[in-house]
Image 1 (cartoon, rainbow, N blue to C red):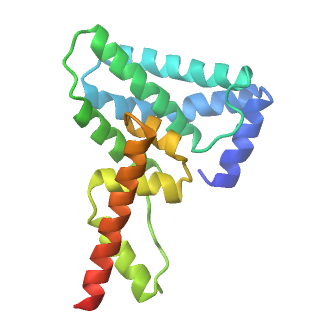
Image 2 (cartoon, rainbow, N blue to C red):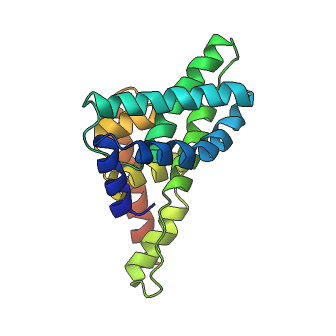
Image 3 (cartoon, rainbow, N blue to C red):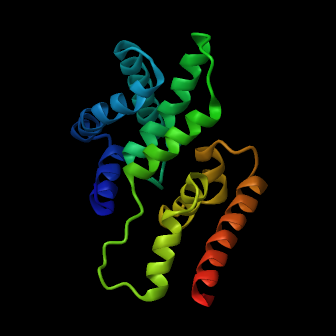
Length: 190
């Protein structure tokens, strides 16, 4: 969904539009179900989790806790849902590999709002940036995409990526930028 229509939808949600809430519920259900099936839960459990995530979204908007949308509604719903999935798996006493879980979430987040340059006439430096960004590790791509493309702040990246502290996010972001910068400089000196 385009940013402008995403903002218009969010404004309608804040005004309590039943049509907007229905659109969000129906428009994101299949996306969420497909995302959640990767964790071995049955469709009934997944639908319950989706409804719980949807209720949290609804309540956060109604009680004024969510006043500004910094991502798409779909990303926000999946962010809520991923923690509810983890909760459900723990309750079912299934062993959860947190790193694998976070890696899948990063993949989904990037597929929801991918970082693509579609301009055919990129400068040489832009082409190098695009090339070396694509070969970065998944965690670096996720952090840099969240910070520069999605405009997340460090605290949001910490929450979204499951990091322990803001300092970890800052140092990881710094290392990723350094790796990217060095790769570009090395290729230009050869």
